[in-house]
Image 1 (tube, each protein chain N blue to C red):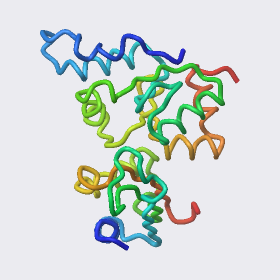
Image 2: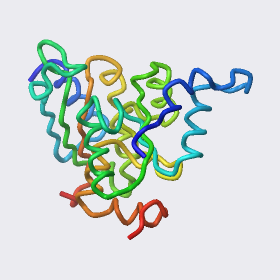
Image 3: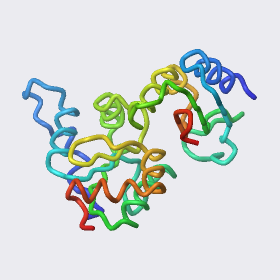
Image 4: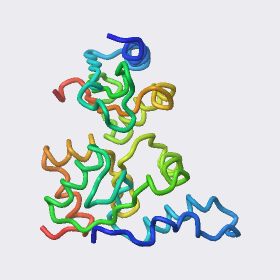
Length: 90
Length: 127
């Protein structure tokens, strides 16, 4: 796992105390696309399960995650595919 | 239905003396004038990003008419739509002026069968 992925994990752990958290570097699949960078770590798939998302709309869930990762999204992360679930929704 | 001829320069042409941010004004007018809008990268018939393509494919599959606005035509629009919606990624699907979501949410709602009823309920698609 690279440094960007580690940072994403740490921030989401802090912000949401997730029951489950998966951060997958999907950059290789986007190699050569706009926004991809040499060395990868530009495209990520994130699955996060946290009670912080219970009773929260999809749009608000993503806003919460985007907000926690604002620095990454403004910098190295070009795309983040996100699945934000409450416990029991899996 | 798939082209948005005026949109590419409209942000630049928006009245500067309205006392408001012209890009936000353009976005508001686009959303007021069109019930289903996708702010996306590329044109609907030639998306330039896989995530934008997903949203277009789903809307086409459901047979809903929409206006696609190519944010790559104007950097101010590309940044402006993110600020407007407090949503840092593109594409963004709006129905009746409300942000439904980006490609993850649109795909999730399509797969779970929630998207079509929403569009029908909003009167932008016949059942």
